[in-house]
Image (cartoon, rainbow, N blue to C red; front, side):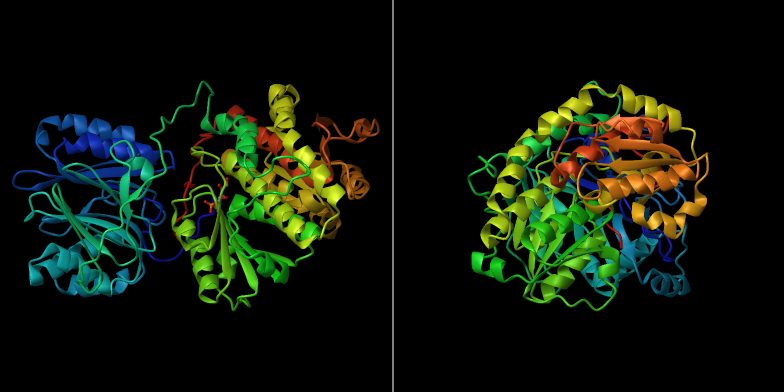
Length: 627
Ligand code: F6R
């Protein structure tokens, strides 16, 4: 999860929002909803409830349990309240303090709101509001919006209109839920470049930044589009556009079941999710790969066969772990289909002139489907006429809604912030896609295709074998857990595996881990090597095995502490490596799926051994909705 910092005050970006108006006691619903979003990693929270004659705000720093405690202290105050809004905050600029936590209010406390996103022109608005006498209590950009909407409200005396007029002048990204004391049980909500949906119940409406917060209460929902404004009371809903024109409501049935976020006996969600990977692969093969001799079925790809054959370029854009899956995808597509593929971090893609056009297929890869950089990149490519294929674990996400073709990877909800099973699922999408295209283009020998397909079907069992005996991995993790730095080296199709292994380790253990193309070691990084530095070599049999072995010798000659992750039984490895993790044999093309599993486990066991917060590592959030 890469976090991008900017100089714009409080970003309040990856926050979670819940709103409710109906007939039930609102506080429990808001706390429940926030809890469903909390696994993504947050640092403070707050709730505002509408009471008979005022709006009351409660806040706490730290985990949600602190807000629960705070609410208990005031339990007599909101028994009759059935309308309210709640928020969990992920602070960037502006410390996680009670003052910075949402909801924020205007000066007289009549207007209250929660916000997810970034207000880019907040400094200008703040200067203008201060001149008019507004007093700011927090360092957030959000508070500016509260004052600004309140100012509009004072002018027009209509909450929906005030929100509409204010958001016309607000620049940036936002999802907002607003209440005003003049309205008994009304919430006005709007969004731009941040997700927000409205759940429809009987005599009640819920508003949230993500499905888990509302799914317990309703499966009927409407996703807001940018600049739409919705006004809900327990028995009415009105949707308008930015000019105030009423719009029809597109209610859909969410393809979700309420899930209990249970660790199923595992110590952490991450370990549980690592163990789910064999089934994730099986799920992804069902209906797509029947037998080795039958063609791959990938009805999700909406490009015509003719268009596919004529494709002369593919761009894949993604961030973090998804970027590593994309790198494996590049290797597969170029090797199997002979189509040039560029892979680029979305955050780089969006700030230069890209040469995308209608002859280019652009693939966006994202576990969450909400990553701001990737979403922006996708929209940019779409505007240039490219066919957009999205690979995501969230078929209901903002990115999915931009897709011309959508491959939903069916990994199930991933709770741990560090991506594991969603990565494996993304890899499966690339195996299926590259084989599917190779079959249409007839660009790969049929016998090679068949051997890959045959082995793909065996991969889940091989992973199960690794998961069944992790002693060596645990021993290795314990041995190196005291290190400050860690190097991973690989070549070819496993270079992304090295990068991913290093990313997993640094994310959850905070050890400075770096992945290198082994051939690059001698061009600089080798200078760092000494007898304190572990170097893990991903030594899978195939085209670059011998080369990587030589690179490992070079590192060993500098006294590095050598570790091998290998499917080779070659006895000479025993002299070279002080620790050897053996994995089941697998052909080179499929080795990234097998090789990443022990790396996920090494990261997990090191972090667990060091007593880190494995599922919610510091500074990270599960869905990065800020550029
Ligand atoms: C790492 C991790 C992140 C994400 C990245 C992109 O474990 O989860 O690096 O891969 O933030 O997120 P998505 O895939 O949701 O676009």
